[in-house]
Image (cartoon, rainbow, N blue to C red; front, side):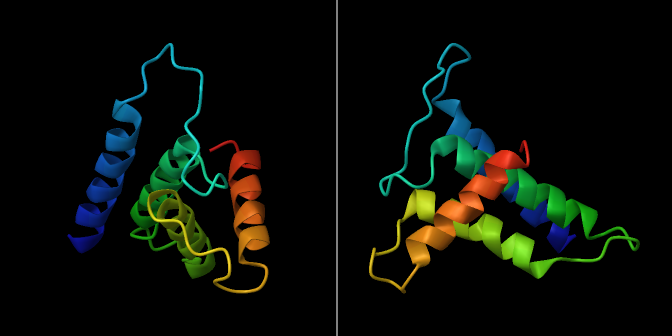
Length: 105
């Protein structure tokens, strides 16, 4: 039941982010840090919702690292971390966003 509620919450988050974007809007809105865009945050939310839904199946092995990466991408769009948070943080975030984009999500 808890997983279903979390999945629903993430899907509503993604829908809310996309609500301001019309079908003719081809411009993706960059987040405050410029690393994560609105579409990246939407894709991460749907990926995480799908991950949560899939983990309820006994044959799926959870990958906490993938879930954490999606959460970090969503958080970076909503509330960017300070540039000096940790050495290499921005490079790591850019690599995670690149992997998300290349996954076709």
